[in-house]
Length: 359
Ligand SMILES: Cc1cc2nc3c(=O)[nH]c(=O)nc-3n(C[C@H](O)[C@H](O)[C@H](O)COP(=O)(O)O)c2cc1C
Image (cartoon, rainbow, N blue to C red; front, side, top):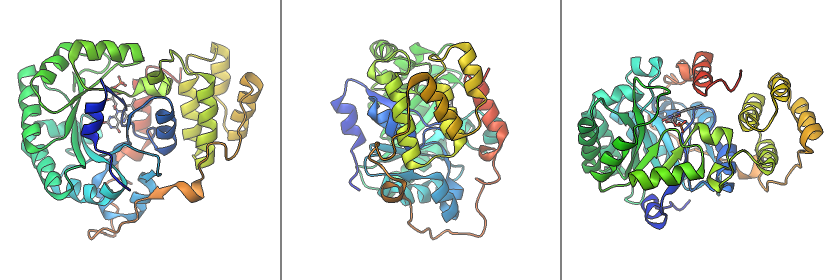
């Protein structure tokens, strides 16, 4: 697969419209949908680098792509330089860049030295960027997703040093680790953006194309990344204020053609229909337990049906997995299968943070 040059993408567009990394949600079928509705660039969910390197099972579980799934950035959670570098080398043939998660504030991640905990070890982050930069082609992008530190001066210092280490671009979730639902700090985005030569991607509370344009105008950031906004309306970057029914129809066709587990199929619909279904409809829809019950509901209420093959994609012939073998294969499968990424508590925390979508 030929890499897309991510830096060219930033040069060609006023701002790049980006689907954020989202554990469990920014997977292949959702990325296909996001691209169809105006996203220029997609991130995979965060993948545990140690498991990816040590286990073929983790690789095939955690990463799938297809020929049209580009440009694509694969995000890793890593707490050692060697894990991040090895994971990047494995995934480079199938993607256009790797990203290091330095923003996850969840307890399990911080405790094990992942995510936002890395912000306290800037030398380790720089080393990770430097080493990947030395090992992959110049066209392949290396980026870091960070949060604000407690003073802008410190965030700028960190961001600049990552630029010097060779980061292709940076993403800034404009809240500190301690801030969850408070408004983002647009002024800090502007300050950090102005102090960098590499593109800065803004993240936090972008819910509409209009909102993205305003934040771009106010901060100068060259990328606008949305997470929750994309879940509730995957067509937001096309200018839709709420999810159009065509997008729901496309989700049904793409996800069922590619094959998804029921929870993923249903959760996405719950999110997409949040501002579409009336209250009583939501209550009923949220309790549905099978794909056929969901399809019956969609047919009765919106005349949406699954048309097999209409996405033009098939699970058998189009899905690509990372089948490169690793020289660090071990009997152990790394932290993935034991970590909280796989446990319900994370799911609950995430769903809480979505602001009561399941209420
Ligand atoms: C369901 C969900 C899963 C997320 N998973 C990740 C992840 O895998 N990696 C990451 O860096 N951030 C993750 N985040 C954080 C988002 O990428 C983003 O930084 C945050 O939600 C703020 O953006 P928003 O206001 O557009 O939602 C996740 C957020 C949500 C809601």
